[in-house]
Image 1: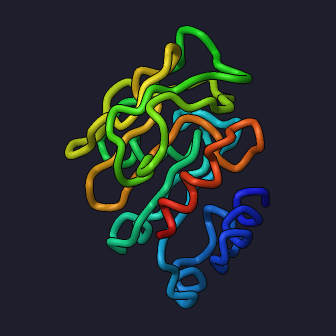
Image 2: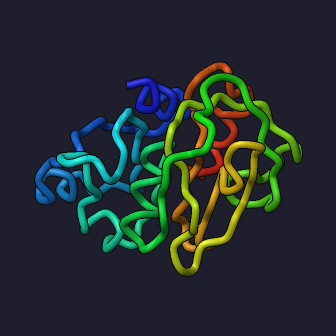
Length: 170
């Protein structure tokens, strides 16, 4: 709900739908892009939310946040594994690619982390956009509008989060 609210504050109409919403229902909205939210599941848990094929097949921008990043990476051929150290609370990411999501932002960002798993290997075609001490792949992107971030831009504990979301919807 908070992600949807933040997008609406940016002047973007956004709806929150469950991961298993019928494709016809979602695509009838003609979305400009998709945001995959976080959650407590692991991509390897039985019954964990999966990524509907229509999301990646649509060619529309995708932003995976926390579990959403892990789900995107896993679905597209990357590897996700339990982190050696669970990250919960304040953290810092070092931006490696200062365009796209991180356009016009400083090279070091305070962020809010909350995860036990992390992306260990990126899917084919993705590059690392940012790193942190606990997440060597704190942000990834494929140059085609698909991104994953291991932190939460929607919370106030990530001061540049609004700017990151604005860069995604721009």
